[in-house]
Image 1 (cartoon, rainbow, N blue to C red):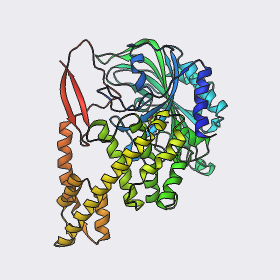
Image 2: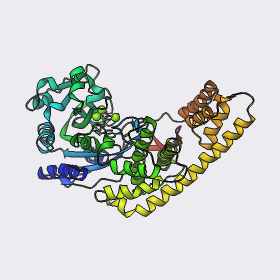
Image 3: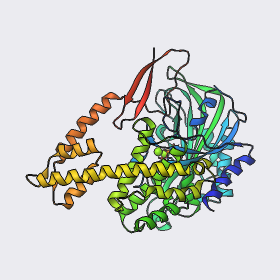
Image 4: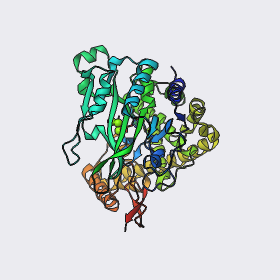
Amino acid sequence: MNSQDIRSTFLDFFKNKKHSIVPSAPMVLKDDPTLMFVNSGMAPFKEYFLGNAQPKNNRIADSQKCLRVSGKHNDLEEVGYDTYHHTLFEMLGNWSFGDYFKKEAIAWAWELLTEVYKIDKDILYVTVFEGSDDADNLGMDTEAYDIWKEYISEDRILKGNKKDNFWEMGDQGPCGPCSEIHVDIRSAEEKAKVDGKSLVNEDHPQVVEIWNLVFMQYNRKADGSLEELPNKHIDTGMGFERLCMVLQNKTSNYDTDVFTPLIREIETITHKDYGKEDKVDVAIRVISDHVRAVAFSIADGQLPSNNGAGYVIRRILRRAVRYGFTFLDKNEPFIYRLVNVLVEKMGQAFPELKAQKQLIENVIKEEETSFLRTLEQGLTILDRIVETAKGIEISGSKVFELKDTYGFPEDLTDLILREKGFTYNKEDYKKRLEEQQSRGRKASELKSDDWTILIEDEEQEFVGYDTLETNVKITKYRKV
Ligand code: ATP
Ligand code: MG
Ligand code: MG
Ligand code: MG
């Protein structure tokens, strides 16, 4: 099944279960002071869960563009190094706003995975909340356990703690236990060696979480206590690219047709092969991932810039440029040339990409050109530092300055210095960096829940912008 069919099968399935299918909300949030980008499928619906707005249909399904590069969910450092975390990804979701609850949510998830997608049930594990003996003093989610028992053998139902199996949006508001569905796609040989159970939630690249079913049944009150919600909700999120990996019998998201056209294009442009050398592979994965994040963001109207969401996007693009520069030997713009393939692949499901194609290409090309200039400038300065050096060790402060002033990354300096037979004082460098970071941290004791509720009855005072290490500006409010 190709990825388009996988997506439409999900939506059709829930349409048949009386869900309204809605398009993805924009990924960039313009008027939410607590969240910069949509980072999960439920974000666009939070007003429904809070009871501040009423949906036309209390059953909805969609594929939501999500970006996890800041705040509570920041997967950026994983991207490219592992094979199943992306910056931008699609979250397939079905929602019940005070309508159906656990019984249907579990039954339908199971039906879709095992009967429609025909995933072998022997590769699936599910988890349920084990309860907590903290202040909440919650019992195990026996309700979910007993429902799962009807579908899957009990030795495949695992119990999980609050961190993995209890979802909260923030300090207050709807919350509840969740059940996650994990797949074990290792070879029979590997399975014989280690029990899959012990690998669930352990960051194994082939024992991965695919679907999270959240059962919102409580409300966390301002004093921290829980009360049962009169109307219970369902919030589910399934990683689309991971689902494609399973259904296409691959062991990496990057081997699915979501990414292979991009990877082939990168290979053609750079004359490098994917799958031969680790560093090249990481670079190719980074670029094929990041071009999606940047392109979708521009399509949503968020251009790279020097602050806020725009700066996050600029950093993602620069990260891609640098991987191309360092590991694929590309010192001329080329990432913009991938937009064509991306639009061909995804333009139908996301028409905004098609509509903004020209703009996306132009902006990326411009950004690449200017950052490559920075990189080259850094190289010239580095040459001069090396020429005038007294010994073979360069001071850490010089390397720090290169990074701080010219945006020239440390690992690149390191690589080049080594090539030239030089070293630098890493401790000194680290010290300078830590000084700068602690300055940044002090400036921003930042809350990073899924969101923070701003209570309407109480007056809010605007207390200004905070600057993170990354120079991302976060608007902060305080109760008065
Ligand atoms: P993980 O534990 O793998 O980081 P998660 O528990 O953070 O996932 P959820 O917040 O439960 O993820 O999101 C729902 C689903 O979205 C996950 O089950 C997974 O399939 C998918 N997902 C989460 N993060 C990513 C990501 N960075 N890239 C691709 N898919 C993701
Ligand atoms: Mg995660
Ligand atoms: Mg998880
Ligand atoms: Mg999860």
